[in-house]
Image (cartoon, rainbow, N blue to C red; front, side, top):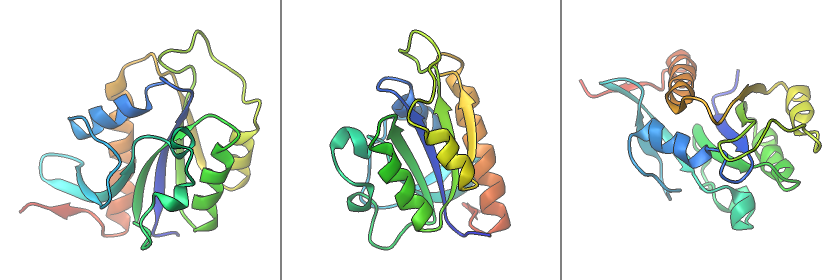
Length: 164
């Protein structure tokens, strides 16, 4: 059982990755330099590190975005591209559990598309959890799914903190 997890949103440009993070935090958020609180309910929270803009779009390697001391929980946007493999391999090589939500079709996509890059099979072969969600559908559902996953994952590892 790993004590690190990445929740990744995988999709084309304008698929709904950043919008999902905004909904999750209840405000506009950007990639930070430090961890921040993500409230899972009215009083309980978990420390997370967010990479809102994908490393692929920034033309950077994820290892240059993630702090030197790897955070326990990373929320990460991943652009569906050849470069995404480097981002995924970083997390896999650093022993992160992975939940990947593939926004397919994405919000601006005309229709669902095939995984011509083999990213999904790579993830499944490495025991990652992969879920395909329609980026055109209710964003609150994605946000709730992420909260519920992190609550369960964090509770087992005693990472959930409270304001009380």
